[in-house]
Length: 565
Image (cartoon, rainbow, N blue to C red; front, side, top):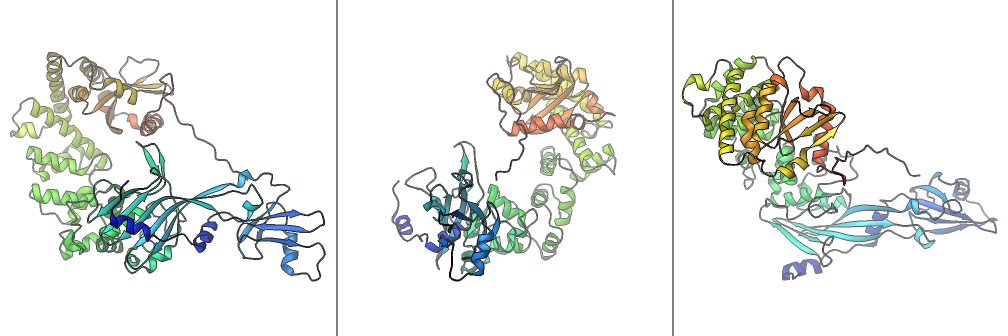
């Protein structure tokens, strides 16, 4: 691959791996002292820690205390302290260690260097073998997987893992939506891969660098909630963090110092910028988020989810509210985990509904002291009802249409009528035969385990019949199922595969709804009753829906951990 003059100059001046670096790499491996008793009674020692080969004679003119201690400790697998370098070691008797294949080890490390202009990181794969006598004292061999150069305003990566000559990518000026600079040590296929964690050598380079010493990675970032609390030996986000800091140094520093870790985490992991909330070109956090001094104090006091701030910006802009941070946090926490609050706001904007009136209506439907889950379920029922009413051509300004006295009855009537219209339209258009992508979707979702099975309906009529038998509103979802907008699935008992039992709504790998007869009124929810089955199925979905040659689902088995001596 052709390189620019700047890239070639950077590579020509790249720091080299020194002997001191190799010694630090060697410390990433367990240390051993190998011993062998000679025919004359002397004992020969080979140290993997400090690379020495020494011999203690059988008859000595003077005896040193460390010699006697070493001779006394020369039992296979005994722990000891190296007398030459004081490292902790494991004693290995060569007469009992065999060919020592079990001692072969690999490590992944990121080695840091720096100069006044930039910080350099080499991602190295290390390996140590102990097959020959020379191997016993040799330093680890290493292979360069990727190299990184971090400078204010730009980051360069040269990747050797997939390209022998190295493939160069840059992040300049601002972070792109696509990660041009990625973590090292890819594992997996080209279409789906992950990154292995690694040890860091030379962290003092970061802590003393004139630009990066303020990045807070080792000082504060490691102590964030859910972080390793500073005790980590392996890392998986250092490269991504330094990349973001190189582009937005002041912003990253201030957010982390303030304990606002979520936007930084989303930025480095998923490149989610919270653009409606944060102006990343503004280094002052208060100005960047458009907050008053009082609102900034609220933010630092309650640390809300930044999704709440997105809701605040949307509601204040489109719905005429004047929320502060506390108001947004309260709204965000009203909906449990089953619903994204932004869906409520967008729904209100779509139908020009007063947000306060909608919240009061849902409280009347569910009870003022109801949980977030109950409120979210009531909103989903109301949303489906209003969508069906809109498509049926009802007057969307009439209060009896907007705010029905008995929501659940009105919902079932409206969605059943809309299902009938959809079915007639689908049949008239000749689209009632099979859903879009039916074969692939069926292969993805259909599943059987422990006397239960999941099957995908192949016609709108089947979905409508399911709704009639179970007395719920699934018929209103038929057209969206046929178009591939969402997927309706039937959960059946294996010994009665044609008898309606439970209905599931999926969007991708996310389970949106699951209901049995009469929407489970007065009954245990299927999500509770069949929790183990559903967890196994969703885990199988997340794994890519693997199947064997006969097309049967391959259920991953839990493997017992084994310890290799």
